[in-house]
Length: 431
Image (cartoon, helix red, strand yellow):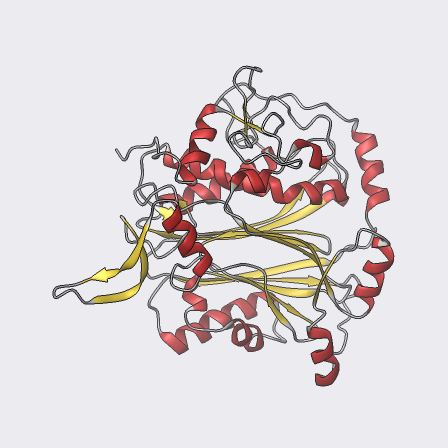
């Protein structure tokens, strides 16, 4: 894939691994039988600010078809469509650019959450440097075999509907009205949260962040609102059972009209393309066309294309409490087989902190000796030893976060981090 961000600075040269060795590693680390991925999308435009991305031919190892993965994303723009278009064109490349080279499949999946954070922040930083005031949500989904990884900012939701009929939300809505933790974070970082005041002092509408009046606490862009509206995504990674499942990814034009359960139930039994149309149709029937309304349906289908019967209501209720189970460090393979056999989805990773240091972790935790000691963890430019600033610098000392160890940030990304945490004003000015 072409590097969309080439020419911005010196690039770190990762150690190269022979292609034959990578392919051999792939063959050992994953099952030969992968599920089939089918998708469909539908949309009705009101303001022309919704954009989406579907790409099913990405490869971890170039030229190796067994390393293929798929990407699906929705970008719901506001205050114009510039941020949504920019994110659609650049976010994927920035995420992949933050991935260490030469990883096998399991290592690649484990490194993905950190790369997603770096990719989101880099996309936001680059767009803000253009001086435009547009913003966008981003719900970014990677499907690699049975593993689904979702990163999101804003309120474009992704849900999972399993063969057993259990519906789970794989994102968190970053709406100030509904998310108390995000309200507290924004005000602690220097933002002001309140409703729109009209003549006479009455307050109307949802909670917003001022200046700017944005209803969201996380987004890409929105430089006119304040850096406390952060681009750091909530990330969740799950492994499906061998029964597969259905993902429904949609903008708030859908979710303001339908609950997650209603959307899933409304399109069961339909192929992906018709399912997406049905969800949009039902949302319009319920609420009318009051906003851009976009939906992507992704079916992850077992290789034999067999459909397991739904669990009985009693069994389903018992399984619901076990629907997401954390991966145990011991006997991982045995546990995975047991969970898969009863149709339970295994939770591999979940993190929603808005603190960049927490999300980037430390270099020791990655287990990679070539993770880029003198490379900016966000924008991937090379740093001479005197330039790098640890992401942990200034943090409270602990054995797990040492201010002298990586990952490191360039001066611009360090300023970005401080501005997001309310430690200094944003260095970006609106043109």
